[in-house]
Image (cartoon, rainbow, N blue to C red; front, side):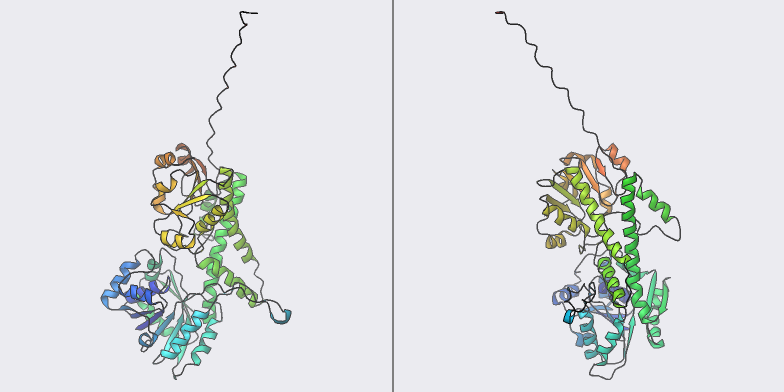
Length: 469
């Protein structure tokens, strides 16, 4: 089939490459001329594990190409995917004549509208238009209205096919998804998308067919619930720290219950990235717009902020005064396997520490350029050991696997003060105790090295009587 994927970002690019791998003829359409030029030379705009190889293979086969021109890319296409960004909208003005303000958190859907306009203007025949961007429920109704204004007399069917890609695993999730969700309101649209995904379904993916609104709502519901699990684990960590219990052991016990599952129960610095914070706020706003006050979602967001504050409190407790202290951050991307720093807890922590007067240095295997653009005051080190050199505290912010293999003896020698705050529970507390660190994990009992005993003061000299007395 002939497919156009509008938007060559973290969703669109892996999706386009995977569909080309499945045997379809795919054009990645993006209005960023620099990005398109780079992709035409097989240079990726961001790091994602195994994506370079997939793009190279698709481009070499001729099934994957990139364009900036919708009038060249869209004619003749059977399916067009909308994979553009839906960032949080700017704060909205108060209601007219003193009425209530519209709920905050609604996403900005301008790019979705513009994509639909391009499709309507440039399509040469009937087409199935698919929302893959994460959008609020009932967005398809708006897309249909935009398409109905097209100058041609083509028939457009609008479907919803939310993405469930995990950054760092996006290629695996595209080629071997655990589920494929398609919402459509006509048998023909379902038939077209079943044929499109047939090669991927044959690998074992579950195909869920629903109506459009159910599919639109399902994506926000999934991300909100995963955020809830993370925030529950972080709230549990605060209780464990107060009680002297081990949140990792409790999460393992909880996770052994098949009704709960172990995934997303790791306590830490909170969730970040582009999706969870934005989608949680959007789901909250949608609920208010539809007349339901889903207050639980506010508590999820509050607990996420609290998790980061708890790390900052540990650092301050260990160092006493932050001003003039040097703090090293290991990991700057919001999660391992990506260079994405959007809503990264590490960078939020860096800003707070810098604002308190600390000198902050960081290292990340992939995200240096992105971190520098976000926090110019952050010093960047060439490796983890260089970051630790002379630091009064080292903080594990992102659980890159290579950090777990660091030479602890060397690390201890480099640190000015052997204090590690582990925001991701990367290390074993017993190992850290033997290595001589003061170790402050998350939701687990701390390891504190006792200061050496004070040396007794020397006895005052004995004053002998003078010979003259």
